[in-house]
Amino acid sequence: MLNTIWPFFIILSFSFAIFFGNLDALNQSILSSSEEAVNLCITLLGTMCLWNGIMRIASKTSIINHLAHFLEPLINFLFPELKYDVEIKKEISMNMIANILGLGNAATPLGIKAMKSMQEKNVDKKVLTNSMATLIVLNTASIQIIPTTVIAIRSSMGSNNPTSIIFPVWIATFCAAVAGITATKLFIKWGK
Image (cartoon, rainbow, N blue to C red):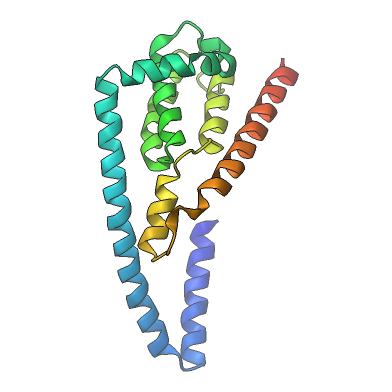
């Protein structure tokens, strides 16, 4: 679908620029947007490298074990099928911690690793387990205490106060997480 929509908009933009004589403005826009995109990528790359490094170091220390122990009651509630699987719970903990820190891009590989581990133990490889569905919802609607990526984007775009969105992010992500988890638990219960 997107393979059709984006080329359509690009062709439409060029057509309007040619028809209305704004080809110079279009060229300037393309060049300035490219520069902004490169600056944004460099900013995000630095942020992701920093937090991926911190998560990598934390995974080699006992910090993750302490945080996983702290999150264990919540993980046992959300993933009752994995109650005795310590390794998968540790992977889920790392994913949750990365999401809580607002590191969506850093959380993705951790979530994929947890999904692969759960898929290995999945009896029916073509159907998601309840735990896999719960992880997808939790990963999508995660609570963020420090929205690092959003702050980095706002900072790179010249915001005077890039951290002013923290309180609204807390409210929005808390509501999204509660709604997502509630819906998932209800669908799991009704599906039995």
